[in-house]
Image (cartoon, rainbow, N blue to C red; front, top):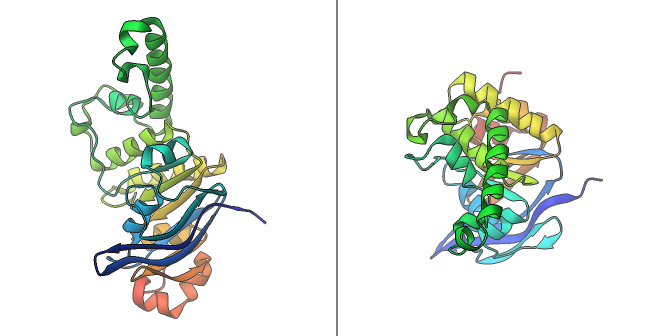
Length: 257
């Protein structure tokens, strides 16, 4: 049986008297594309924030590839193979698309005060390697033609692809996507789906928050539903479509095949 690559035990996050994540026991199987659904305010984005170290849990544990990583910061988790995108991308608008992607790798020599002074040749070689890798990633996400364009000038859908490109620079094992299809035109949504599925075939694991139920039901398995910070359903897309509680509360109606 496939082992979980990302899991939680009694994960809880409080904001004062409000409990946004309530005792979540989660298992994300290696190589899966898991859909995370639920109404607004269910705790989905808060769960992502706790999983990725942006928020510390009030209680409970997070495990990545079997290791307890509870409370570790986002940069350390990224270095260990856990990446995420955001519902609203915020690239550095005045920088080019290529420069945004080149910024993603951590601990670059050029970021250190002594790097350009003491190791200029090594720094230039590292920068050249990062540039080459960034161009490869941009070609993969179909943004290579916009490499020199200012990030502020590209469309919302292209910014979603840019976010994915930045994450891919770290070559993570697990990628958490927060509403990747929201506000994206159908053509770019198709590109995004194709790239997710291609990466998944290559071994990447995905957890996807998405309100587009056609997207979830056609491309995610398993599906997990949250309500009031608790998991209220786990199962296949087929089981989700046959679950009367989900149909009434979250899906609204039967999703077309």
